[in-house]
Length: 346
Image (cartoon, rainbow, N blue to C red):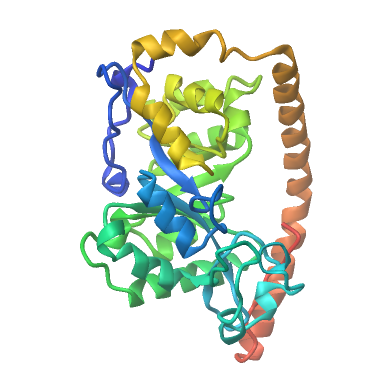
């Protein structure tokens, strides 16, 4: 079924970053915004300046990227705690200073520099990127308070060239414990819960925190728990729903049909092509080929079970992690020269 535009959320003040989506060629339905997952990851080294530039040139509305913390408290743009996969160095970012990290280049060509959050903000100040917004994935292997505070300090240092950063940056958080910290350090900034389970999203949806949107695993939205109903519930509550990571054309078309507000993809050019030809006729033409096969239904059920089991594991893991982080904060207070490294177990 084609999306009913009347179900689109009425955006609150904290969602000013999210411009109304473009409509299909025949005006039948609004289209999701295109968000480049770690930049144009299909063609360039992930989370690099080349990947970000390429994503916007390919038509992305926004960029999703990841944040880590260096040993000397610099907010780094990187997905992994370790440097090994992307830079070929068997070290943790948390064990390295920015002076050392700034010398590294990606294994993948063109060999790109590691970026800081401040570098990303400077890029967003450039004329070619002033229209874009960023979804920041705040990684959990860093102490939450230290990380949010450092993000706030960095944003304060880099002045925006046009719109305020609160209208261009979304803070992506992996758990409800981060939201009070975001309200404390960055009160005007929109937030989104990053989750692999619709149940986690529904729990937050029931809270009084009315400005929190959702960045949800696409397979969870498609799964046997009827995740797409979350989209309607979220829109009724004036929340946005993003979906990650969508690289198959049939999943991109599923996202359009079911009213996802933004699609996170490694290939923004491909999603742009699908959006450019989308209309009622294209929806009818592709409906049959986009049906889930029996194997895909089995996969969705398996993923739902694994996510549920993993969720139970985290319930036991989080208390241990929080205790460790508390000990680290106490150690930092006793020795100011020591900066919190966080844990790598999450």
